[in-house]
Length: 129
Image (cartoon, rainbow, N blue to C red; front, top):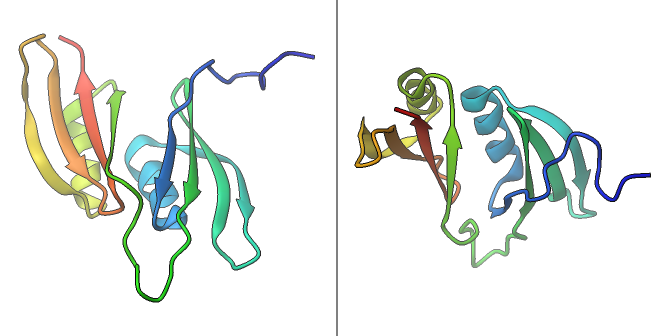
């Protein structure tokens, strides 16, 4: 038996978000993500979830909500290389994302833009060169 699940990389981002269902739906819509597993908490929230994006697995958990605190988790930034940054960025915008930085050529030559999913995560969408 391997020391990690088959098909998983050694390092996976782990996002703590306010609404795991919303985060999973955003990742599915924008990055063609595939849900691997979702483990609910007793209170109906999400304890743990995993979703495949390309050759990587993103793990996430949901921050429990209280009546006085409806905010998502801490701000998170995730960089994702995709085949077409412009098309992916537009899918993110159509999925309700808020533009942080319009796509443009950066100092490294990559086409990159940032968009917030409204759930505490800013996705930096990039295509090399």
